[in-house]
Image (tube, rainbow, N blue to C red; front, side):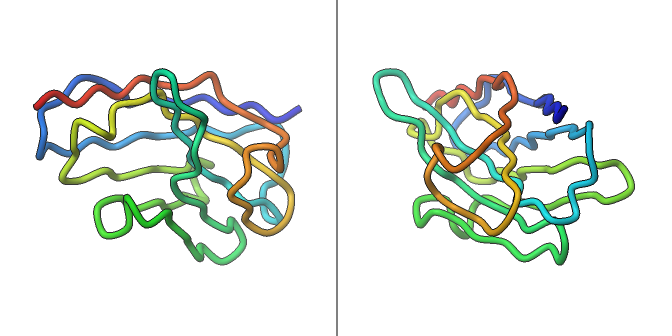
Length: 123
């Protein structure tokens, strides 16, 4: 069974940086896409970024492109989300998710989820 455990959330000020990590276990992820989603209060969960475990190729939603970087560490079986130039509108609970196959932006296409980690950005 896949387990995803996020860490690294916290409270920062606008313009600061933060790195989230997702520790993945339970199977071999070579054929998987690993993604980050976020959910702000009163809003739907939205796709942020994805990385294809096999070759490290990435994709981003436009609102974070150029500020956030997703990567995977094969040795540690982790997926990281480096977040720079944070804005108050980035405040949300951030979730790590996994699906077998190519990246998808719909949360319904993902089978496995972490418990989430809170990121709060003050102005």
